[in-house]
Length: 419
Image (tube, rainbow, N blue to C red; front, side, top):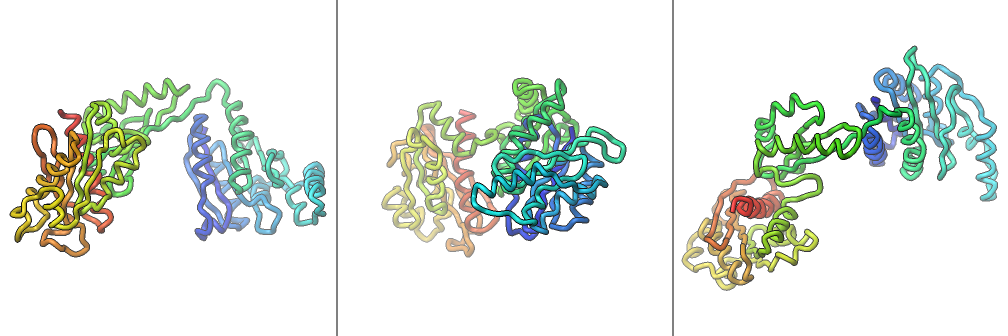
């Protein structure tokens, strides 16, 4: 089945309200194997809403509409469905009575405005709303001579939408598919240290030829590239087999640039590796100013492997606390390979950790050290010596510091995988 979503409300187009309904609907439709092809937003205009409905019915089997079912004159979804289907609105006494009883319990007498909710397009039936006053609308039938078309209209209030989707729309559509029902399952592969184009080049044939699962690249912030794998199968076990096979193909090509999947992060994966080896970590930070330690301690259970960190921003403190040699900083920039190396060794000694990471560099916006803004040295002290890498990052101060911190952890992750 092909589906579309139509969100109604001028407040959405004006940016006054953030649409969370469409994401929830999309997830629930995917869960029962319905392909979502398009999402539209229309303001409170009868002609534009009805045009969207007609276009969706020509393209898709299922249309889910949110919003525009209230009692006021700008609530136009009922009328728009009637116009799109070429039928009149019909008064439903049972719906009117439900409204009267609902408000009578609250000592409120309703007027004609409220009774606008008692009208349904002819050929449509009520979609029960268990938590609100606005009845939903349900249509099943032909449109322009083609059968098997569904319209479901629900209020835009998120709680009401979810109740009606989960308790009404999803069961109805699941039953209609019978033995043809499939589920859609997605997995996100997360890569670090490689750009979108570089990753795409390595898996280009998979991106263009894969059909089940499909594979699509996604940019995530300015630090990661994701590959979204989406499989359709009869159940989760069958979908997992399809996803695993494609993931293995991608990992064989891309190697350690792929650090994890779904909710995993560079910090969480790195700390899991340390836990599995029963090893520990310490850090010494200069330009990252505690960002590296924060990324580490954001991971639940990090205390098992994280011994501690030293933020030595000042050159004198680098010498006094971390044991950086005076000649290493005398008359020179602290942004250097030798300073990074000595910082890492000092952190390893102070914390007593198996490994120690160090960061030093120039985050900008103006250079304070003479080094080009974005120049970063990352050092990893390990039981067999010290590894130092020079990096050049772009972006503002915050972006450079975050990339440096994550790159330091990724340096350790790759070292652990290779050792």
